[in-house]
Length: 448
Image (cartoon, rainbow, N blue to C red):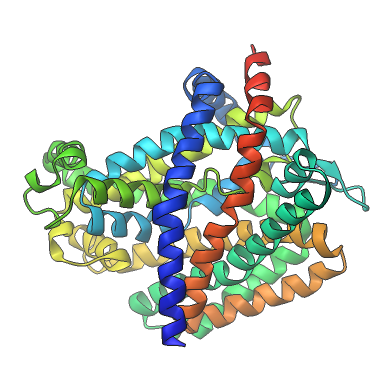
C-alpha cells in the first residue's frame, strides 16, 4: 500500500507540476486576451452587484435555481477551504514569500477563466426530468463535442469529480477539522467527524434549497470572522507589514535575497508552488464552481460571469493574502514549520493559546463549507450519470466518508484525491478552449 501510494503521488505530482500548471495558466491568458481583459473591465460592476445583492436571508432557492448571491456563496463555500490556510502556508514554506506574488498572477488570469466557466454554465444549463434547473461542465462538454467522444469526455469528468471532491476530497476536509479540534481542545477526531456528518446529512437532505440557504449565511460570517482575526494580528504587527510586502515582491524574482526565507528556493520553485497552490485554492479552470453558477437566476449569462470573477478575488486576493501576511509579519516562516503547523505558529505568536482555538474554529468553517459545496458539485454529476435515485446512495457514502476521514488518514486515498482532482481538469479545459470563441463573443456583446 505504501509503494502504491508513493507511485500515485509521483503521478499526481507530474500531472500537477508539469502539465496542469502550464495548461491552467495558458488557458487563463487565452481567456484574458480573447475577452479583452474582462476581469479588469467588469470587475467594478461585479463588486457593485455583489454588495448590492448581499442578503443573509434571501429568496428561497427552488427548481428554477437560486439567487446570484446564493450561487456565489455556494461557489465560494467550495473555494475557501483549508487550502486558504494550509495551502498558503505550504506554498510559503516550500516556495518562499515570492510564491505569493505568483499566486496573485495566476489568480489574475484565473479570474478570466472562471468568467468563461460561469458564462458557459449559464448558457448551456438545462432542466432535468424533475423540472430542476441544472448545469456544469458535463453539459457544455456534451454541447461542444457530440457523439461518443463527447459522452466519454463528459463521463470521465463526472466520475473524476464525484470521487475527487464528493468522496476522497471530503475525507481530506473532515480530517482537517478533526485534527484542528483535537489539537485545540483534545477532543477525539471521530466525535467531531460524527457531529460534522450529522449536520452535513441534515443539509444534504434539504436539497439545493437548504444548501443555498446555509451557504448564503455561513460564507459571509466565516469570511468576516477570519478577516477580523487577521486584521487584528496585522494591526499588532503593523511595523513589519512593509517588509512583508517587500519580501513577496523581491522573493518572486530573487528568492535568496530574502533574509530568514526558505534556503535553496529558486525563482522556478517560487513560481511553481505559488501558481499550483493558488489555482488549487481558487479552483479557476477546475470545473467545480460552474455547477453553482449555472443555477443563478440572472438576465443573461454574462451577469453571473462577472460575479464569478469576484469569487476568485475574494479567495486569493483577500483570504489567502491575509493568511500570507499574518505568517510573514509574525516571522513564523523562520520556525521551520509547514502546512497547518506553520499557520498555527503564526496565530499563536499573536493570540497566545487562543491561536489554536481560532485556527480550529476557522478550519471548521472553511472545511465544512467546502464539504457542502463539494457534495453539491458531485450530486449534480451523480444525477446526470445515474439518475435521481442514485443521489440517496451518494449522500450516504459522502456522510460515511466525512466520519471515516475525520479519524483515518490513508496516504493512498489522499494521493488518489490529488490525482483525480487533476484528472478532472483536463476534460474541462479541453471544452473551455474549444468554446473560448463563444465566451469571447458573449464578452464583447456585454456592454452594460
